[in-house]
Length: 71
Image (cartoon, rainbow, N blue to C red):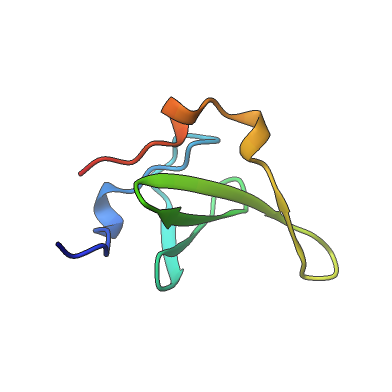
């Protein structure tokens, strides 16, 4: 099974926007609320990009059901 996601199916778990762009393999960026997301085993992991370029996890802000991605 192909683990790549159709960008048209991806919604941001934070703002629910479909304005999501692909930035790498299983890596996405929400242009509406400016968070980065990675998809691993059907779960969306969310990160805030800090000023120094590092990533801070935002996963604790979301219920796991909100972060689940199913095709």
